[in-house]
Length: 106
View 1 (cartoon, rainbow, N blue to C red):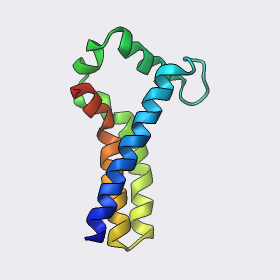
View 2 (view 1 turned 180 degrees about the horizontal axis):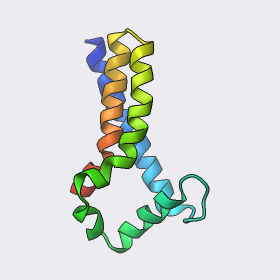
View 3 (view 1 turned 60 degrees about the vertical axis):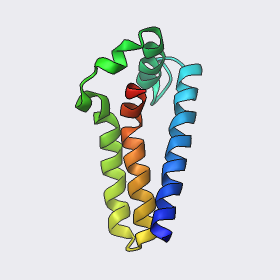
């Protein structure tokens, strides 16, 4: 039961975090913003031309997030041998990875 609850918490936090990030990149900054400027430009641009996000190929839509998830999840998997941690991390990582695709489908 605990790993399932941890997975549910991972889902909620990933949804909340991706929503806050999406809101922030839609409303603040521009392409010159350090680190996330290119994502801000894309995020604001898809509201001007909303069909663009729906026409991206699956891999093109997810490759940026997949790199971050892959680099983060492996060390956490190796560092912790607890099903609760794995339940949280795997669900959180999956939802963060696919949040861009979920947004395209919405």
